[in-house]
Image 1 (tube, rainbow, N blue to C red):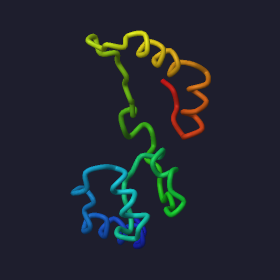
Image 2 (image 1 turned 180 degrees about the vertical axis):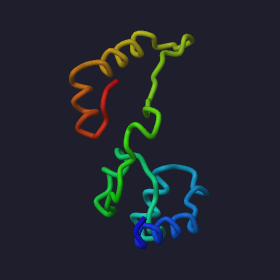
Image 3 (image 1 turned 90 degrees about the horizontal axis):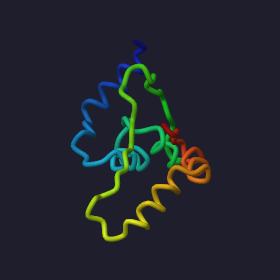
Length: 105
């Protein structure tokens, strides 16, 4: 491992962004200069022009990142829920998700 990489990892461990409550808080800490590095989702990293992606974790080293959605049985707006779920499965929604860095399962 290069000395620069070792130094970055040591600094990351010392800062310990794990105390922050969310991935977005970690991203903000890096973007604001309050941390030298942070581990965030690629889609979150893509929302900031003030950071630089240094590395991407290979997909074979982590479980798939999945955002499930479900209808609540006691919903008082069943037709709206079904319409929304249908939209989320549509080509239009797929295009929006992909434009923001997400891939559909």
